[in-house]
Image (cartoon, rainbow, N blue to C red; front, side, top):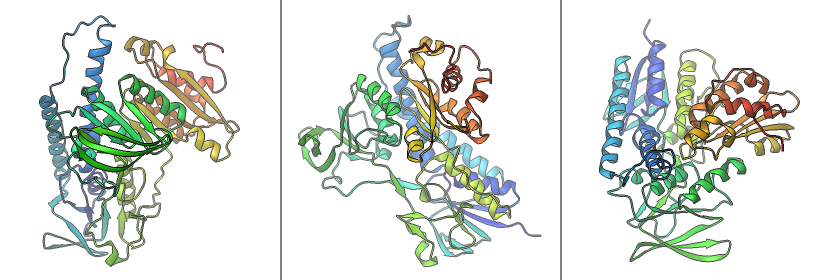
Length: 461
């Protein structure tokens, strides 16, 4: 019996994971990529931004924390060219490793722009590849609003911000989401005077306000200025570089900066695929799928940034696994319940499940347990005490509905919260799991205990 033929369009964290998983399940797989293997995440997203953020965090510690903890460092400064080389080397190594992984599993890798010719065929570079099933994983691109002056030199996207010739003297970041906050944190550490302009009343509007406020205060201490409820209406040239005209709650205002980073988010990339010709349904530019990740055209599936609002590498990877399992005859539905979110600023922020405000909108009666890191021994040792652990539980079922973490290795620790949601755990389940001492993870158990006022190390009000 011949192996099932699967074509995957796009070799980002969704596409290449799907391709390898399909090969594991016995399929004959062709993976097509227009640019570079690894997609946005590896080349201009998760990986290179975290290289910059790691250097930024270390630089902050050397400048502000080293002396306090007994380490004397003279004239700590940034070597931008060395950082750029390390970023390029990290991306190069991971790209090579990913390509070796794909080819090592027997996946055919083809470079070029793919076009859907039928529900059973894809064309790339003049070659038509027949398939039993097709997976679209073409990702996203930066979303730049149509505002006068946004085409001027000096107006950059997150892709551009990873490869500047040098850190600018000043930068305005337009956007208060994850991308904007990560770049604001990094460039502030590099010595750039950073100003954040955001249209919403607060940054990171999807988070609970008490969580977002912790990051804002930390960034303000590092010299970042915020203008909330403010929008950019026009950009022109000036001696300093760019002049921005804004509308704020107090009226019109102007800012000048060397660079304007447009970090308003990303939009699906499906250009030239041929979706319309096959009648594949889209909504606001996103491909519509069911819970099996299949489109309205039988045999064509889609995953990742071109499908959903999450725009997270780990979501795309899981969607890819779900899609190919369904292609191979299984019946698997995508479950987003345990999707973690991670923000790699200093302090780090990580979340999973419902926010407190989301639970309120759903009419759920909840109890919330918090534990401040200023009471945690490991956090005191590292000097990272501004954060908090937060556990939200259903008052009736006692099951954990959501977990938020600020500070420490939050982006690593959030997996415990995701596991709790997956198994329908209660705060008692977390509390009765022994956590090593001294670790920041102890704060998770303490927050769980405080859902019902049982925290041992939490002073009574």
